[in-house]
Image 1 (cartoon, rainbow, N blue to C red):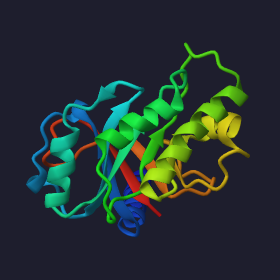
Image 2 (tube, helix red, strand yellow):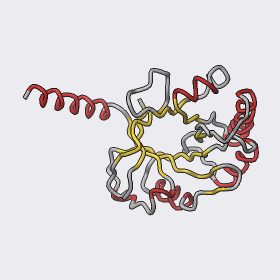
Image 3 (cartoon, rainbow, N blue to C red):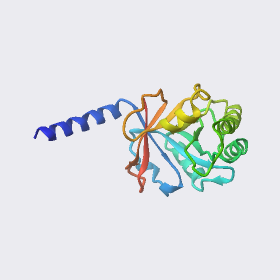
Image 4 (spheres, one colour):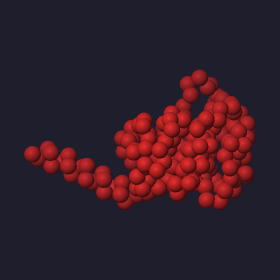
Length: 202
């Protein structure tokens, strides 16, 4: 009984914590066709995958972008960055794909380890800066960096301190200052048939 009470207490605490923050999710073509009108109103923002590397455009981006806006979500787009492809060219693809409008959330750049890329830290930072500079220049907004605590501390720290962070941590809320926290990749949302990433804005 005591163990059960503890578990119930933890669940209640987690629920209250989530209620106290703005909730959102992020999607790509991997989620398939989304029934947007079925998504519960507790979710207020969504990030939609737009592009990856220098040549891939998400085949469902345009539909998801339009539908999310029609259903009154706060909408942003993200780019999956290829560490070994030219950052300026990646920015060009994103700019070509994602319309600019005053109510959009800041563009997000997804930065993750790639064991096949052997660039030095200095080379990685310089390549990422090529994209961030072009994105900021075009949209007039400082882009958000999506990453893990590990990648931030090893590669990005000291070079991107002024950028808002979207941190992935499935064990605990990050202690590093952050704008968004992705706390699970196994979320379930009515209207989406596959597991989905869930995020909060503290």
